[in-house]
Each structure stands twice: as C-alpha cells, then as structure tokens.
Image (cartoon, rainbow, N blue to C red; front, side, top):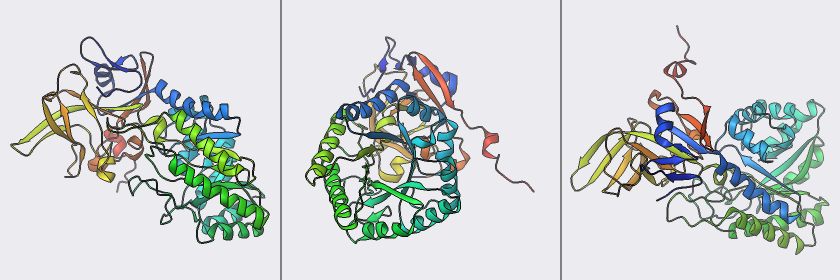
Length: 433
C-alpha cells in the first residue's frame, strides 16, 4: 500500500489521513479536494534545517512557494524558521499577507516586471536574484530613483544536466534562466556592477532542475560555482559571501522511485560545498537552499468522486472522476506518474487495471494511465497521492471548472485553508455590457 506520513487504514478499510477519514473530509468539503498532512510538511522543513544547523555553517532554507503558495503554507514556513522564495508579485503578496518578514524573502524570475521589482523594493526584500542584463539595469535604475541600495545574487546557468525531464531541467547551458557560465556573461555582469552602485553583489545562484535523486549534480554545480568565486576573487577583486544552490530534490511519486532521506542529501550538499571551496583556499560562504516539491508534494492527497466508466474490450478501461487537468495538469505537461487507491475500500484486493480520466473536454485530460485498483464503482472515493506540489499552483478554470478546496489535517482535526471556488467566482471578473 502506497501511504505517506500520518496516513493509515482504519478497521473498516477506510483511508485515514492524519487522524481524519478521507470519506469524512469529502463529505464535509466536497470533491475534488486536496488534503495536506500538516505535520508531514513541518517534518520536511525540519529535515532541511537540522543538518544545516548541525554543520555550523551560516545558512538559509527558503521554501520555494511556486510549488504551492497559500497564506497557510507560508505561515508554516515562517513558524518552522524558513525563508520564502517568491517568483511574482502574487507570491510576494501572499507571503506578506502571511506575515513573513520581507527581510527573509528572496525574489526570483527571468522576466520580472517593473511593477514586481518596485513591489519588492518597497517591501525591503533580502535578495533579488538577478537573471539577466536587462534586469540588472532596470533594478539599478529603480533602486537609485528611490535612493536605495539592494542586495543581489546573480543567477548562473551552470551547464549541469540533472537527468530529469527536459521541461523541468533548468541548469543546462541552453536554458532561459540565468547568466551563462561558459561564455563570459558572469564576468560581464560583475564588471557592469561597477557602474551600478545601487546594487550590492553578495553571491551567485544556480538551480540544476527538479526530481533529483542523488548529490552528483550538486557536486558538479558546487565545483563550478567555487571555481567562479575564486576567479572573481583573483581577477576582479570581488569577494562573495553567499552561495545559493537552489532546490530540486526528488520525491517518491511511485513505488519505483528510490529517494534518499532529505537529511542525507543535504549533508552531502554541505560536504561537497565545503570541499569545493576549501580546495581553492576560500571559506565556505553562507549556503542557501530553496526546496519546494520535496517539502509539500508527498503531504498532498487529492480526493475525487468516481463517475462514469468506459470499457473498450481488449484495449482499455477508463474510469472518470470529477476533476482532472484543471486541478492536476502534470501528466499532460510532462508525463507525470502517480499512485492511487479507492479510499473507501482500501482493504479490498486489486481486480482490474484502469486509466483515470478527467472530466474536461480534452483527450489529453488524463490523471493516471494503467493503475491497478479494486473494481471502481460510481460514487467511490479515489485518492491520488503526492499531489501537494505543482497541482493547485498550476490549477486552471478550463471548461469554466471551479478550482478545488484545500484543507490541512493534523492530529485528527481539519481546517480549511483555501475555499472551493463557486460559480459566481467564475464570472466575478467578467465585464458586462
């Protein structure tokens, strides 16, 4: 059985998540419903901080809120001592609404607008991660006009292939993100900063991709970054004090995924950073990590109500649910794989292999291809696991479907953190005659 965190099966064969039966949650809040195990999220946040704390290094762990942004999860990050990583005015606004100290927020993005930069400047963010030459000039002019100096990191494309899906690989040389490490763009940007006194360069940033299962990619990235730090020190007289290696640790979406504990991965990253900088006669800089998926993905379970089925003899059986690509577009985007169970009949043996279809008028609206289940009946409750990252955050209103509700569960109690959209919500922004 594919269960995570504080999930179990009760004596009646019902799925129980953090002390609350899934069927009770569906009855109370409706479906589709995304259920988060709050204690599992907190545990993952602590798993990042503890080895860094034990290392003695100066560090910061910034939750990458693009994985799932809400006031509730930002507050969890704040309570657990994490910083926040935001990539838009909307994510920044959410973090500030949650009471996160702006001096613990980092702003990313490859095409930040003037309005977003101004919002960040006025808020007083810790760092802007500058992605390109255009932003370098724009941020300087905006900061200078306000008489401000701001701390920045330069995002570097380190040329590391993390062996993940091409759509979630970000560290290769051919990437829309960052200054190219190999064509002199980093040195050009550093030279330009002499004429940009409002920008204080504190360090470099790299992110090699997502769903990474070993430390090797981080080792290569750390080596290349350390080499650049040494070159800037020796050739430009620039000493940098911060190294941000991004995030990207993988999670166990299916039984086949082999995932090392977060603590072991983080300890491995610390060791390789220390070794890389020590070998070049440099002190280890403040180390920043930006986990997202590995913090929230496994904590999320989406509950759907089973509806129609279509049997094509000798070909395939489709079982349709009341959600789909509007609440989880990941299979359509990059072939993501999931495990599922019938939450109200967990103790029953698998009888058939079916494919789970969504309700959108789109042939590509599939959630899972070929999953073994007990024979699904209309009205059953289907639980799809590991839907806590890039599901609600990518949700849409395609076919004018309402986005689902989100609840947090902990110690037998549930709390609503995002209400279900209503039909009136769907037309709220429409302009009449």
